[in-house]
Image: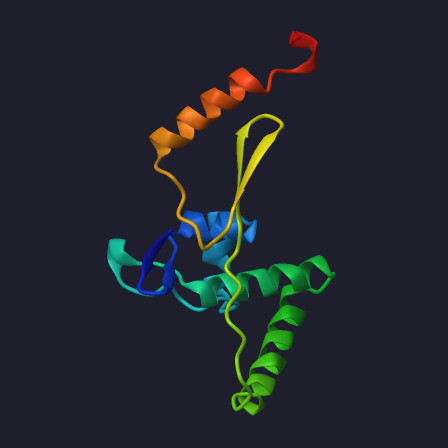
Length: 139
């Protein structure tokens, strides 16, 4: 994730991971107009916080048993309601947490307001965890 000012920018892989879906699902949702098209062009294409919020909404509605057609109708109903509620104050967007499995059985949860360390530092953390969180049967 990169941040421009206060605005989060996600690549398709990051958006998919945060939303708990595959890249293919993200592309399909864009194609089906359940998600807005990515911002930017070419290799600069990216997704923002509004894409993540919409993705989480779509996934949540599906988990409640709605078909994609029903999800689409629900989103449209929400858009009409949002237009009427535009005068209300908007609470700040909750930034999602990133969940990383450092080693099997050990997870790291990082607030969306924190930047993840570079891959080399994460490898060091994984090595440390491997040494200090041994399996019970290893002693």
